[in-house]
Image (cartoon, rainbow, N blue to C red; front, side):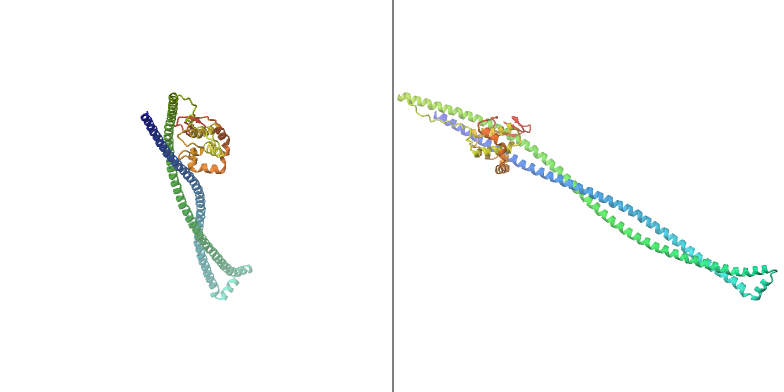
Length: 418
């Protein structure tokens, strides 16, 4: 009999060892899930920051493109003005050439007229005065004499008038030439200024184009980085789903092992109680004394934990962290899982022990549970926690996870319970 008990004890210890090993493996997977969750969070933040950078870069690109378009429009307008100025300079130079030719012609005409006048005067005055008088007196009549006298006077007046006209024309042409030269100098100054402005705008536009090229490179690099982040994020999410599946499988195996061991433990307790009862009866029969000695057997099954104010606060806070955005039945289910673990011999026998057990609840590992507890956020789920502590259980499961369609179990809200 002792040998049989020893074998059973060894078997129980081996099973317990396997259970502990399974728990350690499940905890390791949970740690991987938590680490993967942190990486996903970091990648999401990096992706969001990259999106913001791309948006900012694209706004800067639009501004640069607008400034370049405005600069090119200025270049186009200024180029047209510069072409007009160059054309005006060319026209003015041609006018100056024509004016110079006209001036030379006027001077030549003036010299010719002056020479002719001198020749006529010389003709009239180099001959004797008597000849001129005789020419007048030889006229057959007075009117003819006056006509001949007026002729000499008209010739002299004509020559003088013509000479004055040529002089006036020469002065006028000189003034026009001076104005054209001044205009040409002004146009050449304007041309220089316009060319300088055009050069400055060309330089500014070239600088803007360099900035635009750099900005486009930044956008392309950011988009490449964005694509890399998206690929990494997708891989991490797939890896997280695989870890969730593996964790759920490990949890399911462990839950089955727990139930099997609890049934085995219950059977052994019954056998032990029956053995003790049989020994007691045999002793009574052998001694002939019938006594109503108290039984050493005690109800070792753990029931619901005592609901202190601290337990209520802890339970309501973990329900808030895990299912604060879930329907009331989902909140009850999370609370039921906590109390089911307290009642199980494979988990700590207190609410605080279950909640703070390593690798079990991600809000505890991330610090969100501590923050919610300090902020009193658990009061939002106080009703569900109080009802669970008063004995209500809507699931008999020991585990729950976010429902991703890969885990079999009872789905309530966004969670699957198993």
